[in-house]
Image (cartoon, rainbow, N blue to C red):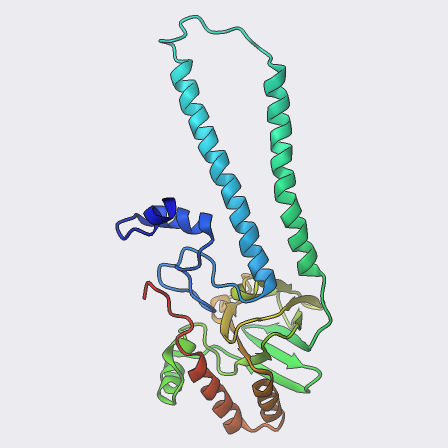
Length: 299
C-alpha cells in the first residue's frame, strides 16, 4: 500500500525521497552520472556499490522505525502526563525494567548495524587477484591513468563547451559527453574483470571517485593508496575529484568506459601505437552502443 502511495503522481518530493530511501529504488537516479531531480544513489554496477546501497537501506529502515517510535512515545507522554491529567506529579525516580531496556535495545541495534558494516569493510579491503591494473595520478587539475601491463598512459582533461559541441557533431551521443564531466581521453576497462586502481598525486591531495562503482580513495602525494572494482555492466561512468584541491577542483572529472574485453584490447593496442584516429573510432562506436543508458523516467 505504501509503495502505491509513494508512486502517486501527486505525491510530494519529500514523500518521494522517503519512499526511495526506504525501498532502495534507483528509479529516480541514472547510471554513471547525476540525473535531473535525483534523490537517490546512481545505479550500482559493482558488487561493492550494491553492498553500499544495501547497507544504506538497512540503516535507513532502522532510522525510520526509531524516529517513528520516538515521535509516538513523545506524543503519548505529552498526552498521558500532561498537567491536566496529572495535577500531582509522580515521584518515581527509578525503573529497573526501563533502564535495562534502554541499555540493551540500543546495543542490539548497534550490533545489527555492525554486522553488515564489517562485512562491507571486509569486502572493500579484501582485494581479489587483478585482471587489470591501473595507476591513477591526480594533477592540478586533471587525471593521468597508466596501464603498466599494457604499457600505456592517458591524460584526461575536461572538455570545454566548444569541444563538447565538436564531439557531438562528430558523432558522439550527447548523453555520453555531459557538461563538466566529459573528458578528451576516456579510460576503457573490460567488463566483468577485477580492476585494481593504484592512486597517488603529483602535487596536492585529490580523491579518485566513481559513484556507480562505490569507489572513493584519496590521492596523496608521495603515497600509493588503492581501491578495486568489478564492473558488471557496460557503459560510461563518470566521477570527479572529491577533495578541495584548489581553484579548479570542480573541473577535473574522471570518465571510465566499461567495454567488452576484445574492444578493450583493440583500444589498448591503438593507444600504444599512438593511432589517434583508431582510438576515436573505437570510442565513437561503443559510445553509440551505450547511448541512452543515463536516461531516467524523469527526463
